[in-house]
Image (tube, rainbow, N blue to C red; front, side):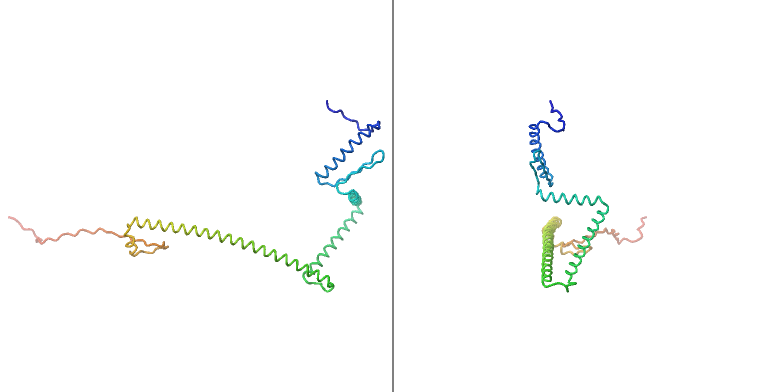
Length: 235
């Protein structure tokens, strides 16, 4: 059987009321602590019993939470009033204007402008600030140059490996060509073939090619006999 629904109303029996208060108070404090840990929330809980005893829980500090609550409540009430809202945004605009003016003055001082009204201490602080900024810029520059040099060295190593592979392939092709020449001309015919003038056409491959031999068929010559042109007539 499931638990019956409890009617939410004041418990008349003082003993039962005290037991219920103790149980639900501990559960409420436990839930508040879990909420602050799980959700990274600032939680504040204040409980006064019927006898006037205080029970509280604060995730950070009760005083800071109360101050933050009062400030947020004041701002919220100001936003609800149109006149207060206008004044609030005017104060925000004035604060941003002062911050912008301060940043502009600092920028001009860093550029070496408007230094007449500064004291020795201010000038020393400005000099230290510039030195620290210059040091940071140099460190960043050195880091960028170091990374570029490292990248170029890696590219150079890759190109060197590629050149080695290409050199090996060229040697292999040269060996194959030498083997083909030996098969075509024989062991003793390679030098003879290389001594034949060759026609250079296009790109030279680094080895001599023999000139092809052109063969032609000649017409047979008619034999001349010493016999007279006119034949001998027989009677």
